[in-house]
Length: 79
Image 1 (cartoon, rainbow, N blue to C red):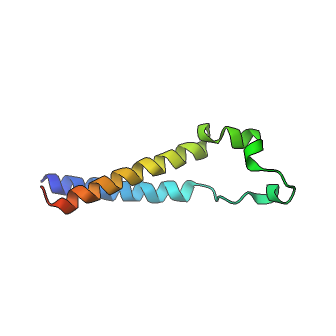
Image 2: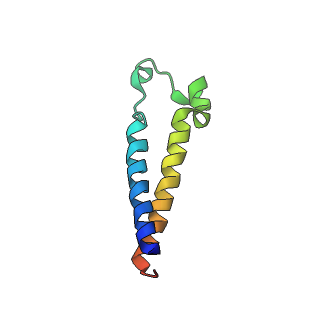
């Protein structure tokens, strides 16, 4: 029974990871590279962790760690 619950949670995490990764913007710097403007010197570059992109990146990392741990638990066949 617990194995089935963990499997369902794993599927939900997989779907959430897919959705969060698709919501993120690309890592290219756009036209800022043409003018020589570095991304880290702008207000956006300094406060990126507090923005929507920062939260999405942290959420992706957290879900990936949870996914990895659940995969290990399910592979150990303890349940």
